[in-house]
Amino acid sequence: MSALVLDGKTVSSAVKEEVAKEVKALSDKGTNSCLAVVIVGDDPASRVYVNNKKKACEVCGIKSLEYALSSSTTNEELLSLVKELNENPEVNGILVQLPLPKHLDEKLVIESIDPKKDVDAFHASNVGKIMIGEYDFLPCTPAGVMEIMKYYNIETEGKDCVVIGRSNIVGKPMAMLLLHANGTVTVTHSKTKNLKEICRKADILVAAIGKANFVTADMVKEGAVVLDVGINRLDNGKLCGDVDYINVSEVASAITPVPGGVGPMTIAMLMKNTLKATKLQNNC
Ligand code: NAP
Image (cartoon, protein in one colour):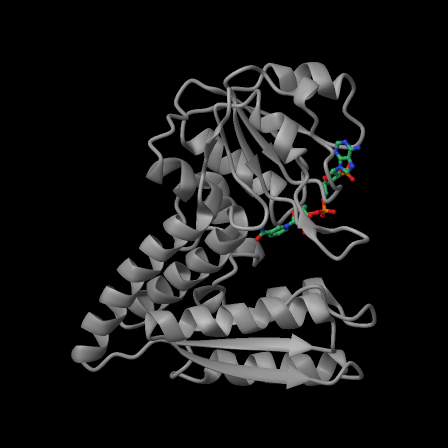
């Protein structure tokens, strides 16, 4: 069996098209949408992500403002910029690209963003809202995974869902969204015993580990849906996911590729959140 390829590029284009339509309709009524992106230092991967986010803004008709700060920026300077952006009525969404250089306090910076402009949904108050299922913004990567499944009519209700990884930005919120979608969810991590056996029970398997080709075909149930969040760079410079794509494709019924799977979805969902922030702030 060769699995159906869940094409994140197609789904993300569809999401961005919808966002662009709504952004245009708002702008025709005099309300513009604007995302401020803050990048600190010169991490090449962060630079690529920021450029892709700016390109997506262009496609959607969302104005993007970039604040590129030097790697010697202090906590005070960064917090002062966030405060300025919080207070600027023209800015609807604020995104501080992570990871920040080590000397900066990531938690403090995230908590300083106005929750109404927190389009990454990392602020504790937005995380809490997700927990109780009454949220304004969904975290972009897990929301992107859910959107791909929705597009391809993949049913989650009553399904055994296994998430590998428990980070605050992917694993934990992913588990929560699957739970809200009536999945029966198991969250696994580096201390999990019998990981292979647990994964083999999954109808829906989400890998968010950060280890190239970690999920092998013998960890996957015949016919499972496999969603690969991982982005790993191999020694030869190529990108690959956390899943051994070629071999797992022979066992799974559907699978996301890397690149071209969950990655583009993350950015599309950021656009959706920026539009939502604009609507919330303008009561429309
Ligand atoms: P992270 O914070 O490093 O978390 C990794 C998780 O994997 C941890 O919970 C860790 O367990 C678990 N883990 C590590 N080794 C394991 C093992 N041997 N068995 C089982 N679990 C293990 O990473 P993250 O931020 O969640 O990101 C995960 C991956 O997704 C990375 O490749 C990242 O680049 C990618 N990513 C992609 C997107 C996208 O847009 N596609 C967005 C965000 C992240 P412990 O908690 O026990 O340490």
